[in-house]
Length: 301
Image (tube, rainbow, N blue to C red):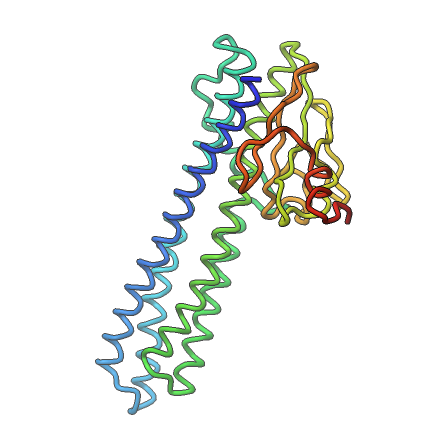
């Protein structure tokens, strides 16, 4: 039972790393907004709203250049933050699992950086982490240019234009959080899966078990998957259309994006006796179906 308990503790450590990452991302956006507001105030003081069109065009161009530099800075820093956090999660997850199931003779040691990079950059819905960040960067720049142009055409005040930009940045913060959570979820399961494959190669018998989060937000397809057992090298098949080795690795956006499920490793004859339930703490083990039935809602699609 200690193995199952340690898996749960490891998941909590991963949650703390992810929470710290999100705070760092949010800080980047807050700092950028503060700088953009200051630049706006200065430009509005230098070039009054009423005046030659050439001054308005100059003001717009100066602001666009400043904001473009800020957005590029955000994305460079966020890319580095995400890569470092995901690498740490992959390494920590794999090391912890291997020490638990194989001891020192199986421990990872120092992982080849190329192995970590391949794991971190594995695509979701054909897009790597860098692909998604670059796609979002282009979109936010285009949207900010649009909002600036519209604000000047309508003769908006400094505060109104600042609010327009704030709204765009808040949308991008939400996208950044989705990426962080989706990638963090995928990488912790990837590290666990890679360790399980190594254990299976050494002859250890175990199965992967899908564990859904026990709350109302879990998507119907994953409610149905809860408790499903497959071999280490076998795939889970989701009612939503995904097929893959574990949560976050189902090769289908309806299964992977913002999924919160995990898989646990289980040795024959050592089924878990306890389970952590969101908002209720550690409780006697139950399936999602029994948990939902006790609370009066359906599990099905």
